[in-house]
Length: 409
Image (cartoon, rainbow, N blue to C red):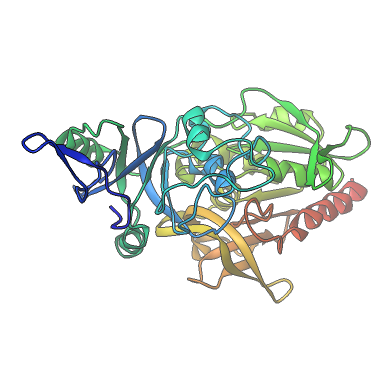
């Protein structure tokens, strides 16, 4: 609990006078699996949620983070203290499905949320979190929590919000301790599309908001939705693609029947090995058909698995908008957005898979391309939502790959 939170006045029944320096009532708890209890103040949905705790170092884009399906099953700790200061709006959303299951389980924030101050704001973060069913807690020493995660890995936890401050702490500790680890969890089913749909929205502009393009003579891209972000689809449409989004379990035969010029493998949550049980056979078949393929995040990991590689759980993962990645194909260093807790083991990949990108933080694999088929993938998020736009060129790289192979067919 922060020391500079305003004290609440509590009456002394004996003297009928207030006690101005009484500790404020804790209205929210974050209970870690090891029994550690962090007290704070509730915000958002009133109730209890659980998940794996990670930290995100981005200084902007909290609304995009809180609606990123890749965070399904997780509680996000924001290292930047001033979350909520620009409010929320109806445009900066990333998940296709706006149900609570399509994003994070909880939010951990350092400072109390202030009144919004931004011309695009339409609502306070508190009400927005309530509407989405996200449990939040403020007043937490997020620096100490981040250091704990950095040193010991991402713990499971329970987050609880009760305005009356009534908590069964022992029950919350037991619930946190009993949570299943992220390894082995397929979290894609709650966040994937239910049916195939066309996507036509293009990128946002200050004047006019989001644009749109009518399907026509563009390159036909089938995007397999493992938890896709909207801005990825917008950039594909902006690049001149006719995009069709399909559920994660769509068969290779159904995809090939659409006669795509290219296939996109989206980002998403959970353990790639678990999702790979049904996704990998489809991806292998598409690669064998020599369909130009581009993967991002979970899609990158699934491509690695389809090539016979393996994925590993990371200690603290990569979550933020300030990660340096080197592109070996250009020799340039990019600052990128990251959000993943698993990584492809480059030593497990076959010779036909060339490592194209590497993290300059820890040397982990961040990209690959195939020498015998038109396919490549990256671990980071080039759609930059939130984050820098250094990697936008990857969408043009995909378009070029499709055009070259379209001419060969």
